[in-house]
Length: 294
Ligand SMILES: [Zn+2]
Image (cartoon, rainbow, N blue to C red; front, side):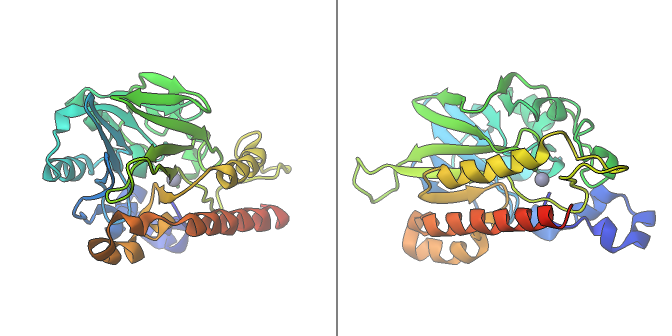
């Protein structure tokens, strides 16, 4: 979830509509996007703004992000359009445990029998369907169908399948187990030995329901949240990034890059400068919020 909950902007509307219904009206989250290749063995299978990625291997495929509880049929259609099988999804990973990225997890696990691997800090949130999220009481992150977790990940853990290795970096704060994934890839048309590093950012945003500073009557969202955010920006700055991706298309300006994809190929996603600018901009927002005493 990014941005200010609409409930805050339209309190009267909240009397008539539940927040999930409101949130799902964001058309970019549910509008299908034709799937496309990002690199060898890496494809985009999400909607216009809710990103999902398919990593293909000879031993089966890895899906990153399950999106909304209504998203699995769209993700499945994208995978099948690319010529891959839904049932070959062996592992489900995610960037964060909010409903717009893990709402579809239970259905995907039921249909594909994939193993669900989730970072510590988010594992209990996924298993409770968002009910143990530190923001749950605020109403800004609606619950979703609970999904079992098969493997709890820790910072720096790797996930391996069919010769492909992804590394999980714990970039907590947005959620307690928010995860940024990196994997080395080869781009079509480049020399065979040229390796490009992909960074898939889990999330760094916050809104008025996040509290970083402990004060009477308003405790921090969770102990250590400010340190987590600060550490997350340190980690993100240090990651080698050639190809910048994330849990929302908006993070890496998917909309402005897509029109160039047909002409220029996957090289349009090479954006080390855009990645650093994203980290710098969001870190500045966080530091400004800290200064204001949020
Ligand atoms: Zn979120």
